[in-house]
Image (cartoon, rainbow over all chains, first blue to last red):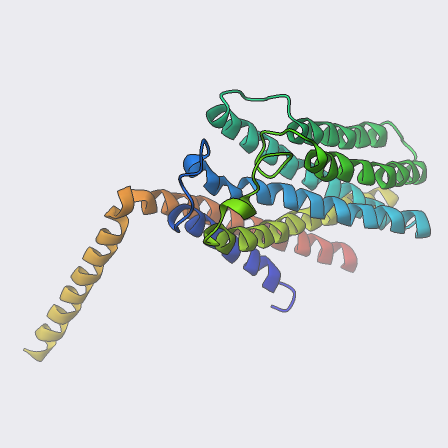
Length: 222
Length: 66
Protein backbone atom coordinates (compact mmCIF):
# COMPACT_ATOMS: atom_id res chain seq x y z
CA UNK A 1 0.00 0.00 0.00
CA UNK A 2 2.81 2.38 0.88
CA UNK A 3 4.25 1.87 -2.61
CA UNK A 4 0.95 1.91 -4.50
CA UNK A 5 -0.89 4.92 -3.12
CA UNK A 6 0.27 7.34 -5.82
CA UNK A 7 -0.88 5.01 -8.58
CA UNK A 8 -4.34 4.83 -7.04
CA UNK A 9 -4.24 8.62 -6.59
CA UNK A 10 -3.49 9.11 -10.28
CA UNK A 11 -6.54 7.02 -11.30
CA UNK A 12 -8.80 8.85 -8.84
CA UNK A 13 -7.56 12.28 -9.99
CA UNK A 14 -8.04 11.50 -13.68
CA UNK A 15 -11.57 10.18 -13.10
CA UNK A 16 -12.26 13.37 -11.16
CA UNK A 17 -10.88 15.37 -14.11
CA UNK A 18 -13.08 13.52 -16.62
CA UNK A 19 -16.10 14.21 -14.44
CA UNK A 20 -15.26 17.76 -13.41
CA UNK A 21 -13.91 18.92 -16.75
CA UNK A 22 -17.15 18.06 -18.52
CA UNK A 23 -19.81 18.79 -15.92
CA UNK A 24 -18.50 21.57 -13.66
CA UNK A 25 -19.19 25.20 -14.60
CA UNK A 26 -16.58 26.83 -16.86
CA UNK A 27 -16.25 30.07 -18.87
CA UNK A 28 -17.98 28.57 -21.93
CA UNK A 29 -18.39 31.85 -23.83
CA UNK A 30 -14.87 33.16 -24.53
CA UNK A 31 -14.68 34.33 -28.17
CA UNK A 32 -13.93 31.50 -30.62
CA UNK A 33 -13.07 29.00 -27.88
CA UNK A 34 -16.63 28.21 -26.82
CA UNK A 35 -16.87 25.02 -24.81
CA UNK A 36 -13.49 23.88 -26.08
CA UNK A 37 -11.98 25.90 -23.23
CA UNK A 38 -12.65 22.71 -21.25
CA UNK A 39 -9.85 21.08 -23.24
CA UNK A 40 -7.52 22.82 -20.81
CA UNK A 41 -8.16 19.91 -18.41
CA UNK A 42 -7.21 17.31 -21.01
CA UNK A 43 -4.87 18.67 -23.68
CA UNK A 44 -2.60 20.76 -21.44
CA UNK A 45 -1.82 18.01 -18.87
CA UNK A 46 -0.37 15.94 -21.74
CA UNK A 47 2.33 18.59 -22.27
CA UNK A 48 3.00 19.01 -18.57
CA UNK A 49 3.40 15.26 -18.22
CA UNK A 50 5.79 15.25 -21.17
CA UNK A 51 7.85 18.04 -19.61
CA UNK A 52 8.11 16.29 -16.25
CA UNK A 53 9.07 12.97 -17.87
CA UNK A 54 11.76 14.68 -19.95
CA UNK A 55 13.07 16.44 -16.84
CA UNK A 56 13.40 13.09 -15.08
CA UNK A 57 15.15 11.72 -18.15
CA UNK A 58 17.55 14.69 -18.16
CA UNK A 59 18.46 14.05 -14.51
CA UNK A 60 19.13 10.39 -15.26
CA UNK A 61 21.18 11.38 -18.29
CA UNK A 62 23.40 13.44 -16.00
CA UNK A 63 23.53 10.58 -13.50
CA UNK A 64 24.64 8.20 -16.24
CA UNK A 65 27.45 10.52 -17.27
CA UNK A 66 28.57 10.72 -13.63
CA UNK A 67 28.38 7.02 -12.74
CA UNK A 68 28.11 5.04 -16.01
CA UNK A 69 25.47 2.78 -14.52
CA UNK A 70 23.47 1.02 -17.29
CA UNK A 71 20.23 1.24 -15.34
CA UNK A 72 20.38 5.04 -15.43
CA UNK A 73 20.51 4.80 -19.22
CA UNK A 74 17.45 2.49 -19.18
CA UNK A 75 15.68 5.03 -17.00
CA UNK A 76 16.52 7.96 -19.29
CA UNK A 77 15.51 6.21 -22.52
CA UNK A 78 12.29 4.75 -21.07
CA UNK A 79 11.13 8.12 -19.77
CA UNK A 80 11.83 9.77 -23.14
CA UNK A 81 9.83 7.10 -24.93
CA UNK A 82 6.75 7.58 -22.76
CA UNK A 83 7.23 11.36 -22.91
CA UNK A 84 7.02 11.11 -26.71
CA UNK A 85 3.75 9.21 -26.38
CA UNK A 86 2.32 12.03 -24.28
CA UNK A 87 3.72 14.59 -26.73
CA UNK A 88 1.98 12.81 -29.61
CA UNK A 89 -1.28 12.84 -27.66
CA UNK A 90 -0.77 16.57 -27.08
CA UNK A 91 -0.12 17.18 -30.79
CA UNK A 92 -3.07 15.04 -31.91
CA UNK A 93 -5.57 16.59 -29.49
CA UNK A 94 -4.27 20.07 -30.30
CA UNK A 95 -4.48 19.52 -34.03
CA UNK A 96 -8.05 18.23 -33.81
CA UNK A 97 -9.01 21.21 -31.66
CA UNK A 98 -7.32 23.59 -34.12
CA UNK A 99 -9.44 22.23 -36.98
CA UNK A 100 -12.60 23.38 -35.18
CA UNK A 101 -11.19 26.57 -33.67
CA UNK A 102 -9.07 28.06 -36.46
CA UNK A 103 -10.35 25.93 -39.32
CA UNK A 104 -6.98 24.28 -40.03
CA UNK A 105 -5.27 21.15 -38.72
CA UNK A 106 -2.00 23.05 -38.48
CA UNK A 107 -1.05 26.72 -38.72
CA UNK A 108 2.21 28.65 -38.73
CA UNK A 109 2.49 29.49 -35.07
CA UNK A 110 5.44 29.71 -32.65
CA UNK A 111 3.70 27.45 -30.12
CA UNK A 112 2.84 24.74 -32.63
CA UNK A 113 6.08 24.80 -34.59
CA UNK A 114 8.15 25.00 -31.40
CA UNK A 115 6.46 21.88 -30.07
CA UNK A 116 6.87 20.04 -33.37
CA UNK A 117 10.59 20.85 -33.71
CA UNK A 118 11.11 19.98 -30.03
CA UNK A 119 9.62 16.57 -30.59
CA UNK A 120 11.69 15.99 -33.72
CA UNK A 121 14.80 16.60 -31.62
CA UNK A 122 13.83 13.70 -29.38
CA UNK A 123 12.94 11.52 -32.38
CA UNK A 124 16.56 11.95 -33.43
CA UNK A 125 17.54 10.66 -29.98
CA UNK A 126 16.05 7.31 -30.97
CA UNK A 127 17.73 7.28 -34.35
CA UNK A 128 21.04 7.91 -32.57
CA UNK A 129 20.40 5.20 -29.98
CA UNK A 130 19.35 2.52 -32.38
CA UNK A 131 22.35 3.09 -34.63
CA UNK A 132 24.87 2.13 -31.92
CA UNK A 133 25.39 -1.53 -31.07
CA UNK A 134 27.78 -1.26 -28.15
CA UNK A 135 25.94 -0.78 -24.87
CA UNK A 136 28.45 1.52 -23.17
CA UNK A 137 28.94 3.70 -26.22
CA UNK A 138 25.19 3.87 -26.82
CA UNK A 139 24.66 4.94 -23.21
CA UNK A 140 27.27 7.68 -23.41
CA UNK A 141 26.15 9.10 -26.77
CA UNK A 142 22.52 9.00 -25.66
CA UNK A 143 23.24 10.72 -22.35
CA UNK A 144 25.29 13.48 -23.95
CA UNK A 145 22.64 14.05 -26.62
CA UNK A 146 19.93 14.04 -23.95
CA UNK A 147 21.74 16.56 -21.77
CA UNK A 148 22.14 18.95 -24.71
CA UNK A 149 18.67 18.38 -26.17
CA UNK A 150 16.74 19.15 -23.00
CA UNK A 151 17.63 22.87 -22.62
CA UNK A 152 17.00 23.43 -26.35
CA UNK A 153 13.70 21.65 -26.00
CA UNK A 154 12.66 23.88 -23.06
CA UNK A 155 13.57 26.96 -25.10
CA UNK A 156 11.51 25.75 -28.08
CA UNK A 157 8.44 24.64 -26.20
CA UNK A 158 8.24 27.14 -23.30
CA UNK A 159 10.41 30.22 -23.76
CA UNK A 160 10.17 30.82 -27.53
CA UNK A 161 6.31 30.74 -27.69
CA UNK A 162 5.96 32.98 -24.64
CA UNK A 163 8.43 35.54 -26.05
CA UNK A 164 6.86 35.57 -29.53
CA UNK A 165 5.00 38.76 -30.45
CA UNK A 166 2.13 37.04 -32.19
CA UNK A 167 0.55 33.67 -31.52
CA UNK A 168 -2.95 32.27 -31.94
CA UNK A 169 -2.44 29.63 -29.30
CA UNK A 170 -4.07 30.51 -25.95
CA UNK A 171 -1.41 31.41 -23.41
CA UNK A 172 1.31 32.13 -26.01
CA UNK A 173 2.45 35.42 -27.54
CA UNK A 174 -0.35 37.99 -27.56
CA UNK A 175 -3.19 35.51 -26.91
CA UNK A 176 -4.89 35.49 -23.53
CA UNK A 177 -3.81 32.77 -21.13
CA UNK A 178 -6.38 30.70 -19.32
CA UNK A 179 -5.39 32.42 -16.07
CA UNK A 180 -6.91 35.66 -17.41
CA UNK A 181 -9.99 33.90 -18.82
CA UNK A 182 -10.73 31.84 -15.74
CA UNK A 183 -11.99 34.72 -13.61
CA UNK A 184 -14.15 32.60 -11.30
CA UNK A 185 -11.43 29.98 -10.79
CA UNK A 186 -13.71 27.35 -12.31
CA UNK A 187 -11.10 25.78 -14.57
CA UNK A 188 -8.44 25.75 -11.89
CA UNK A 189 -10.52 23.42 -9.70
CA UNK A 190 -10.14 20.72 -12.34
CA UNK A 191 -6.99 21.68 -14.23
CA UNK A 192 -4.45 21.49 -11.40
CA UNK A 193 -5.63 18.14 -10.09
CA UNK A 194 -5.93 16.80 -13.66
CA UNK A 195 -2.31 17.76 -14.30
CA UNK A 196 -1.10 16.05 -11.13
CA UNK A 197 -3.12 12.95 -12.02
CA UNK A 198 -1.72 12.71 -15.55
CA UNK A 199 1.85 13.35 -14.39
CA UNK A 200 1.54 10.49 -11.89
CA UNK A 201 0.07 8.22 -14.57
CA UNK A 202 2.86 9.15 -16.98
CA UNK A 203 5.51 8.37 -14.37
CA UNK A 204 3.75 5.07 -13.66
CA UNK A 205 3.75 3.99 -17.32
CA UNK A 206 7.36 5.16 -17.72
CA UNK A 207 8.52 3.12 -14.71
CA UNK A 208 6.77 0.06 -16.17
CA UNK A 209 8.67 0.66 -19.42
CA UNK A 210 11.89 1.05 -17.41
CA UNK A 211 11.34 -2.20 -15.52
CA UNK A 212 10.73 -4.06 -18.78
CA UNK A 213 13.87 -2.54 -20.31
CA UNK A 214 15.88 -3.65 -17.27
CA UNK A 215 14.52 -7.21 -17.47
CA UNK A 216 15.51 -7.38 -21.14
CA UNK A 217 18.94 -5.89 -20.46
CA UNK A 218 19.67 -8.37 -17.67
CA UNK A 219 18.59 -11.21 -19.95
CA UNK A 220 21.13 -10.10 -22.54
CA UNK A 221 23.89 -9.98 -19.94
CA UNK A 222 23.52 -13.66 -19.04
CA UNK B 1 -46.67 -9.72 7.33
CA UNK B 2 -43.73 -7.85 8.80
CA UNK B 3 -41.40 -9.72 6.41
CA UNK B 4 -43.40 -8.55 3.41
CA UNK B 5 -43.48 -5.00 4.61
CA UNK B 6 -39.69 -5.10 4.92
CA UNK B 7 -39.35 -6.39 1.35
CA UNK B 8 -41.83 -3.78 0.18
CA UNK B 9 -39.81 -1.11 1.92
CA UNK B 10 -36.59 -2.25 0.21
CA UNK B 11 -38.26 -2.41 -3.20
CA UNK B 12 -39.64 1.09 -2.80
CA UNK B 13 -36.22 2.28 -1.63
CA UNK B 14 -34.58 0.79 -4.71
CA UNK B 15 -37.27 2.31 -6.93
CA UNK B 16 -36.60 5.69 -5.36
CA UNK B 17 -32.87 5.32 -5.79
CA UNK B 18 -33.42 4.18 -9.37
CA UNK B 19 -35.47 7.23 -10.25
CA UNK B 20 -32.88 9.45 -8.59
CA UNK B 21 -30.17 7.81 -10.73
CA UNK B 22 -32.36 8.26 -13.81
CA UNK B 23 -32.96 11.92 -13.02
CA UNK B 24 -29.22 12.40 -12.67
CA UNK B 25 -28.35 10.80 -16.01
CA UNK B 26 -31.16 12.53 -17.93
CA UNK B 27 -30.16 15.98 -16.60
CA UNK B 28 -27.92 18.54 -18.40
CA UNK B 29 -28.59 17.16 -21.89
CA UNK B 30 -27.41 13.66 -20.82
CA UNK B 31 -23.78 14.81 -20.53
CA UNK B 32 -23.41 12.46 -17.54
CA UNK B 33 -23.92 9.51 -19.87
CA UNK B 34 -20.85 10.64 -21.83
CA UNK B 35 -18.94 11.07 -18.59
CA UNK B 36 -19.93 7.57 -17.49
CA UNK B 37 -18.71 6.15 -20.82
CA UNK B 38 -15.36 7.89 -20.45
CA UNK B 39 -15.03 6.73 -16.86
CA UNK B 40 -15.73 3.13 -17.91
CA UNK B 41 -13.10 3.30 -20.67
CA UNK B 42 -10.50 4.86 -18.42
CA UNK B 43 -11.25 2.52 -15.50
CA UNK B 44 -10.69 -0.55 -17.68
CA UNK B 45 -7.47 0.92 -19.06
CA UNK B 46 -6.30 1.66 -15.51
CA UNK B 47 -7.26 -1.87 -14.44
CA UNK B 48 -5.18 -3.25 -17.32
CA UNK B 49 -2.26 -1.08 -16.22
CA UNK B 50 -2.53 -2.47 -12.68
CA UNK B 51 -2.52 -6.04 -14.05
CA UNK B 52 0.52 -5.24 -16.19
CA UNK B 53 2.29 -3.76 -13.17
CA UNK B 54 1.63 -6.93 -11.16
CA UNK B 55 2.83 -9.17 -13.99
CA UNK B 56 6.09 -7.26 -14.33
CA UNK B 57 6.58 -7.42 -10.54
CA UNK B 58 6.10 -11.20 -10.76
CA UNK B 59 8.67 -11.52 -13.56
CA UNK B 60 11.12 -9.43 -11.57
CA UNK B 61 10.65 -11.69 -8.56
CA UNK B 62 11.15 -14.83 -10.66
CA UNK B 63 14.34 -13.43 -12.18
CA UNK B 64 15.75 -12.46 -8.80
CA UNK B 65 15.14 -15.92 -7.38
CA UNK B 66 16.63 -17.68 -10.38
